[in-house]
Length: 129
Figure 1 (cartoon, rainbow, N blue to C red):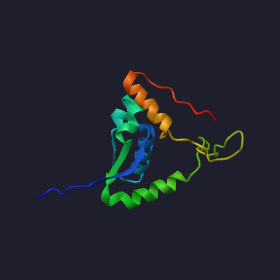
Figure 2 (figure 1 turned 120 degrees about the vertical axis):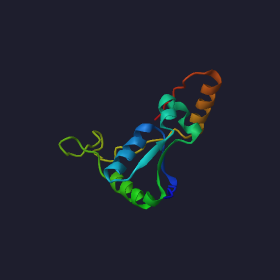
Figure 3 (figure 1 turned 90 degrees about the vertical axis):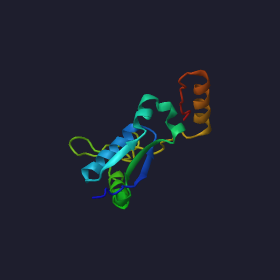
């Protein structure tokens, strides 16, 4: 009996392992096996995650379409408290809690990473807004 080779494909790329594991657990709830690649590197030194291309969520190529559909469906659900009430912003009452979230993929973050590599320090990145 010959073993079939399973082809793994990248489903999503994340900036931190917490987001990747959240998506992995959602897929597991629906019976889809997945693997978080480069999780340890991103956990040990989160500053350099962008240098390796992010933390990748890998799945079987045969599960790709179903996994995209599941993650799209679950990402559109609002965040809720334990009593199933929707969490809203205290200022504007919006339930879009990630509105205005900025990625660190900018020239500032690249220069901060480069400086950290050269000096061996951990840069502090802040948003001026």
